[in-house]
Image 1 (cartoon, rainbow, N blue to C red):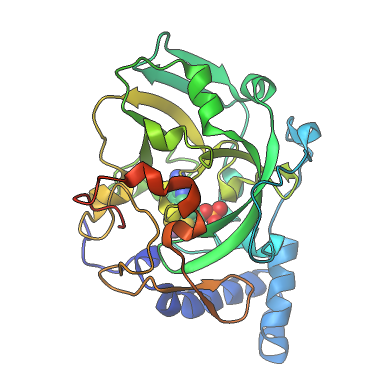
Image 2: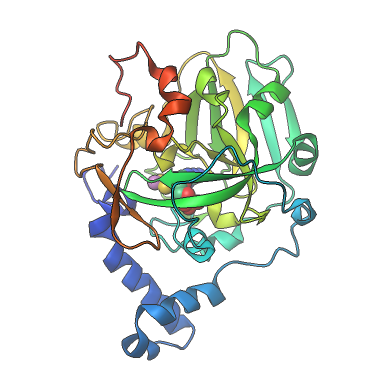
Length: 328
Ligand SMILES: Nc1nc2c(c(=O)[nH]1)N[C@H]1C(S)=C(S)[C@@H](COP(=O)(O)O)O[C@H]1N2
Ligand SMILES: [Mo]
């Protein structure tokens, strides 16, 4: 296991990104026969190139007719919504690679058939198809901030439903203490999963209190359309008061447990990534500061806020837990 070696998203983003982005964009342009443009036009052309080569058609998505839906205006932002192209071409999705330009590799993901297995401490374990689930849920749009542990951030219009609605639908037993969520496992489609030193499948978990907090959200859409593969289609957790790695993508398994599972990054590097992962500007990552963040597509850095600005919603969840490692 390459602990101690530097992998993409473990680097402070200020160090990791410019080189990685330049390399990926150059490869992209070369693939498009536009390599010569690089020197002449620089970043301007790169954005366009990413645009043409990137996101997708919605034609084969049977849920497309469900979007757009009404925005829930209770979740307001203090900043502009991030450009759609940024959000859909600058991603972390290790199943498809450890660089930011996984959006093309992620197109290999097959979204149908797709089923969610619900089991563990529930009245009746069962498997529900994605389209059946979408019909059972009431969709709404919410604008949320997103803060990656690498100190970049964005502001995203998600469509989906409260995780609480899915928990209710699952009918957990009183003994359940954690909701555990897992990503699909398919190394033929997601080549990153052939790297056996990662503890696949990607696993994340929340306490029942966190999972039923009104902010915890399951995204099924993005920018008024079905969510794209690179962003975690067709079901993706969004917990905006926590670092981005908690927001597990492309979920196939929801299980209720009495004991806390080891989560993906915690298992890889427990010194640096914990279970709680609440955003806190005052608690640095062991290798970089969390005091500020770079807003994707913005100019310069802004101050990071406690619980990513959602303290009013979630601070009560952690009262009396001062002994826990809440902010890593
Ligand atoms: N299955 C899975 N989920 C994942 C990841 C991943 O690599 N695999 N990366 C996480 C990290 S570190 C972040 S910041 C967000 C990125 O989401 P985005 O690509 O939609 O911005 O997804 C999170 N969920
Ligand atoms: Mo992240």
